[in-house]
Amino acid sequence: MRKLPNVFLTISVVSFIMWLLFRWYYYQTFPKEEIDAVFEPITSTYGIKIVYEVSDDYFFPEERPVIPAGPPHGSKIDPIRHRVLVKYPQLLQKAFDKYPVNIIESYLSAIYFAGEIDSGDIKLSGTYDPFRRIIYLVDDGGKSDERAIRTFHHEFSSLLLARHSFWINPWTDNNSKSFIYFYEKYDTWKEMVKASEVFTDKDCYENGFVAKYGTTSFENDFNEYAAMIFTYPEKFKKIMNQYPRVRGKFLVWLEFYQKIDPIFTETYLLGEK
Image (cartoon, rainbow, N blue to C red):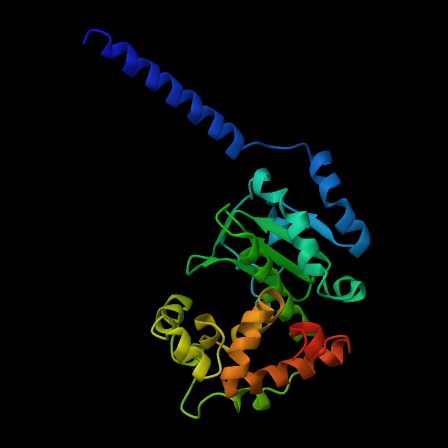
């Protein structure tokens, strides 16, 4: 019995050392030169900037742009941990491989990273600035690789929409006649997202949506199609083949992408029928 305190002391010391090691690994920083080197294949090939040191540049120069552009002024932005950041060159390359090089070069100028962007109304998973052609990717270390890639495709589709005209009626014709996007019903994103949670996956598919978040607005609906098509093509193909409204929207989405580059065929995106 007299040895128990020594045992507890040993356990405490080992636990403390393990905690220190975890903290060191979790918050490990890397020299700028090392980070630049791991991103170099991407920055040199596509001509984009990688920004991860938070500054006033994260905000659009004007406090109230005509349309939303990047994080709203007053948002709380935490920097991304370097340990999380250095995994992104491989993830971005996987995402970029879905597009011809000139598409990335033409529509994207920079990627801004953050560990958290809190607008006060909602914590953003990503956003974009259509004027400066910037995508903001947010990752506190909890995102899976697939979710990180999905976020890129989601936001990039908005940059494409911002540069090309899109006739919305052929798209919304595939919604049920009684459906109204939630941005027309509610005042805040929190209310919209809460309302969308009532839908089951089956409800979404039957009504022409591939994700609950798509019910909030046309743009998010379009974004979610791009995210699923590019990230989970097999899953999307199964859903599309079962639900006519999803198939209808896909054909509208496909026509838009083919005007940007004819490489985007159904076979190229989803494989053989």
